[in-house]
Image 1 (tube, rainbow over the protein chains, first blue to last red):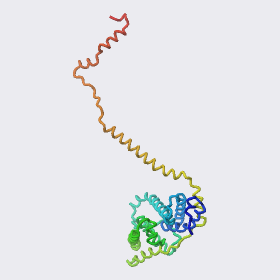
Image 2 (spheres, rainbow over the protein chains, first blue to last red):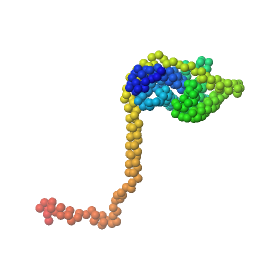
Image 3 (cartoon, rainbow over the protein chains, first blue to last red):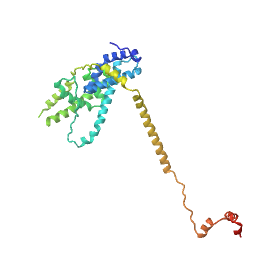
Image 4 (cartoon, chains in turn orange, green):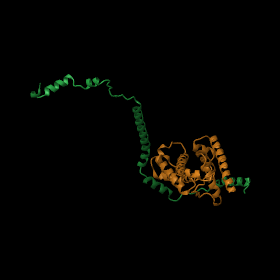
Length: 190
Length: 116
């Protein structure tokens, strides 16, 4: 099903509803992959479409609307992550005096409805490790492992080359493995 | 005590845990919520965000100008206004004595019966 870009640019609400019905689920699941909390992911998805409606005039004819929406969604997710990191900054002093040197900060509001219950604890640890990686590695890993995108699609969405995606994925996996190893070793010894 | 192999297994399970993520449907009425939010948000919020950085830049610029002005004022050489030194009492008297013009004025303003 295609969305009429001209109608969208003309401000047609029906075309906008069509855009949400075609791409809403994909954007919502991408946001859930980046921020594993149903309410937060839904709020961000709403903001993505509001931004898309307001800035549809800047959308270049011939480009893929899905890629454009994914980029908006990723930027919104980064903003959300940065906002929560800033909120946590006041806890740095406290953490300096804490004996608890956990290698992974487990997400407190982890609530991903798409992950099976028996996998929740492992997924939570993985998300904790993922949060400590640089943004681009985090994105490449999420798009590949959770969204099932291929290298070419990821490269297009992230505006990088295919080889850069391969490198990002390899570094993300190595980083995650290191963090998870420290986490599980610590849990095993305690 | 868990072995190295157990830890490796747990790491692999963590990687596998997100691979079979079930795609989630959007909540019902999502489009209506978005449209309601879109119409409820006033447009001036955006203009506030665009003006704010400009104001910050202007404030910083003014602050820099004030600082430069203050520094220049503080570092510029001040004209010295040292008091005149009198070597003898005669010099002092010469400087402060009534001169001829002043004497004349005194004579003019003196009433006739007091004039010599």
